[in-house]
Image (cartoon, rainbow, N blue to C red):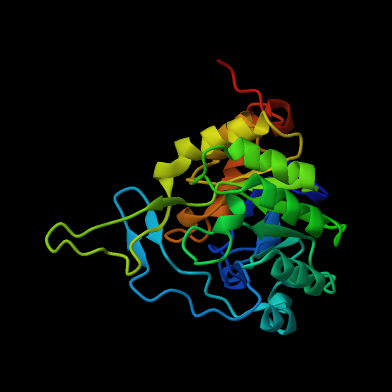
Length: 297
């Protein structure tokens, strides 16, 4: 089960995606069994998020327009980070900003905490004005941002990519050239839901991030394209709900896989996936590292 994600050695390839997990999940299972934890994205200042309604369940997934609601980096470092200190698994901090200098200031503050094993740099948030999305669509900006952050840390530096671009492989190459040690993808697609009876949007801000089972084929395609464009490891996510999904993403080129939206109706799903994955590999004498990127045609 052991795998490498850049500078991190993981006991297994199962993580929890940013924004879908909190330390309270330890009420349901031993969080230390996870390959690693990724926190909800934090920003320089506190955010109350977008106005409701900001969640809507569709036929095959979930629309969300949370808007990066979070306590801000100072409160996070003074209090929230310590909720994770007793979990014996790497802690990856997701963060975002509205300028390169804000990203730099944040990583400088985060570097002061020894609990942190690495970073997921959110340059691809689809539903927040000024945070992330303008960075994640421009390879030149992704390169510059990554290069400047890489100079400030020796920890794992993972760049999170958006599928809402013309050439996701080109963005990944820019991150690798800038010094990223891994890539995570995909963030949510852009979507919308309208009430046919009234013509009113179910989401207050209209456009939202779409996640859930329906996006898995898109995510698989993106992972495959990026895996054939870069040499650094990939953390895959997007529509994961079964251990079979994990194996598919590894065939596509991922080194690890994060469970996201599917945790909401079933909080213990990540552990179920780990158990099922172990059983399947044992029964089939399968080493997951042997199949990475080995999809056939």
